[in-house]
Image 1 (cartoon, rainbow, N blue to C red):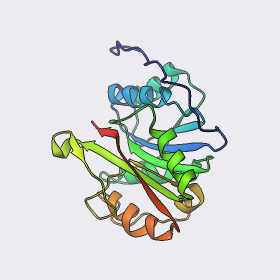
Image 2 (spheres, rainbow, N blue to C red):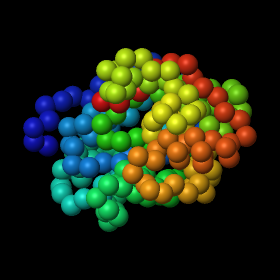
Image 3 (spheres, rainbow, N blue to C red):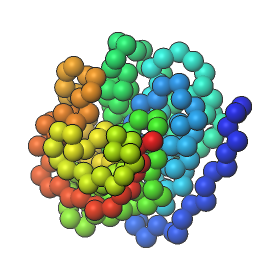
Length: 209
């Protein structure tokens, strides 16, 4: 793959959590092969290995598909969907990935984020411990100069990524209109109210790049 002089990171210590439930991550991707590569590398390095990444692309071009094919990991799947409008590619891609998810847990991200190697393991461990349907964590975000950001379940307090929810709840939850800029509305106003139990991992486990 041209212009990507990178090596995949080594996986961390063995995961202590049984790999009984799959995590599906819906990825909204758009012509950014370098950041897509870094994101997928951070997933390959996860200590919890029972996951699938649904890389959903909504604009013609070979770059994103080339990254997926070069990595050659069967857990990473490429999906091409029609672009609904000039401004809603993120939501359009997210929903397509949600509907294609085969795991018991589901989350989402853009193609320019990075996850700590224990992201899946720690979130699932907390959800199992507390019997939760929805689990989230803190983040480091570009809008705060990549400083530590304590997330909260309010508009502006949580981003598209940084959470996992039971897939059956995600699949039945409609995305709000207008789609552009509605990530927080989806999570706070539509997804969370359907969850009987919510828990949080008070650690900074992902970076908005």
